Image (tube, rainbow, N blue to C red; front, side, top):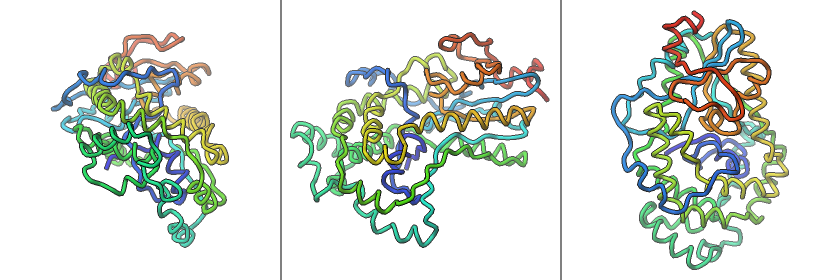
Length: 373
């Protein structure tokens, strides 16, 4: 099962609250709202197969002030399953580091404890289902349901349990099933980083923004009964499923080969934005304050990065690639505070609305003396 810990978290917060997570999603962090929606089939010819064999992966971003350096790896969750990542730059940077920062994410604290968690589990039964016992055929237009049956047979087989679910969860289930057939894996980056860190007696420092939920049972109860404007999410998923999978494969190939210019040109799926918007606009999302979650995660990461830069000669961190290549660049605030940001090898375009230094990978930097020893 592919597990992505970013875009699915809002759904997990709304549904699970106690830390149980049957949902998983193969999505990267959301793109800017201006991302263009690609017509169905436009990218299906981009990459028919995933790359394989030994691949270099991308170079590293370098953030520095004086002789203190933060090396940043841009990550994708889904990468080619048949690839062997030659991660020498990452391993060298971690070997020099005094601290490794984990990926930024948010956590849910329902303050339930073990017995409280057991107590809430019964209320989670059926939490993904449509209210009033309705099925998909009852809540989506007939033409969409006919399209759904075709794709369901192709990717999910005869799983009738999904017919009870709300459109957004049926859409996620369909997408996950399609990803499983695309020769992509999410089990590559984290294990390598943790292994390299452990070899130098380092443990990744969590970078978490925590959402506290005071009355999880009441929230789950309200969610199960309340509406969710997820029809557009369902429709976009059906219309763009094959093209979205091809697009993710193309992005994975670009990451594997270190072609960051190509990766920057490949947009994220607008369908993901539509599904996330359905959650953002829900009453429960507003009640929990999840509408500002991205800004809170960014500020939490920036504070941790600045602290690490002050305390350590060398620090290693990872960020979703969309937080480095997109308009919502996590490094921009650091640059505004006087830190120098150096682009990695393989990224020739200047960062949007800013001038940055030429590229160096960690390996190249070490041979030129640019990386502190």
